[in-house]
Length: 241
Length: 237
Image (cartoon, rainbow over all chains, first blue to last red; front, side):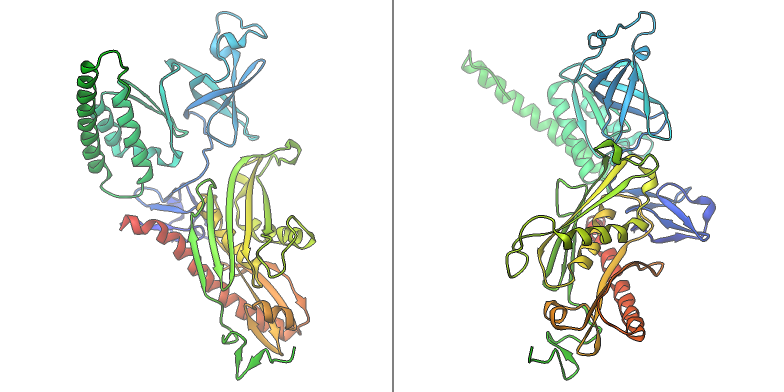
């Protein structure tokens, strides 16, 4: 069913269909990375692991790690740092030197799109203002190679996660996932996503995730019921989870 | 050395001339590293960890066109009979350099400009042939880290003991033998990426040794490949 390949493995002679994770040498296609072979339309190797390298148009979640006028320097779970220009944040009013932290400060987490990358891997971002991550929102991080599994075929997995939990889930290309909603539901979704990431290479995942979600939701509900009745009995004590 | 190193066509440890010591490979043994591998070759025990590609400091070391590779071969103080003084010495610096150059031809560094790929090889127990064990381990660890490569590198030593060309010398044979020649190659393409020699061999002996080493490298390559594949296929079923 799945074929695991190792760098240097011969895959095919069909050079025209060679895609990502492969290389061509003397009219043959070889694997470039350690991963699973996907020959559906083009020949691809989906790697198990690897560092995220941004591409133009990718949506990423990053955190501000430095300010150096006129840029914010953004960490995006990659070997490379990205830059966000002041004009991206405010185009009507001018942001003065030294006042940049009033708009975005160190530690703030943003949703951004990769606007441009040049050959020396200088990455320019544009801020996606419609998505504002507030302090206290949940961000979880998984290897970016597992992102397609979280989304599922035609979005089946993400749809399942959203419907069963009622949470807002935002998946960025760099492996960061933003979850918003009821705290218990957020916990359940985080657990489910980490499980998917751990078992990304196994089959029948969607069904297992569905079962797991139901079980977790039920379990949490029971817990809430018992803790709330307990706190009702001895009033005054905080009902900590 | 009074005892013969070869008796009745067998070596000190009972092996045939072209027989390797047993090999054990385990992939992904370290949690923090991006890729890792534990490798045993007889009594040699090495562990390789790969980090990266990651940001490289100081910045003037960066190459605007490709990733650079840093390789550190290090022997644990307890890896040999007499305590080894910790820290890099002349020998380990040389081994680090040749091992790095043995792996460089397969790594597609052009995908990650301005970064570094760090390879750490720690020798836990040594019994001659640790540089080849280190290269084998590092090669698997690189693949495990998801680094794009043209193939895997496999390495083994050949040498001359009591006038016979033998494969994969152990410590006794290395110490009292006539020559030791570690070889690293890309088994798929038959490309030699490292060859060194300590001692004396004739042209014919070297040629014979190379053939034996190449065959052994192909076997090691199969084992490296199987180790990587079995890591995930157990779970996929």
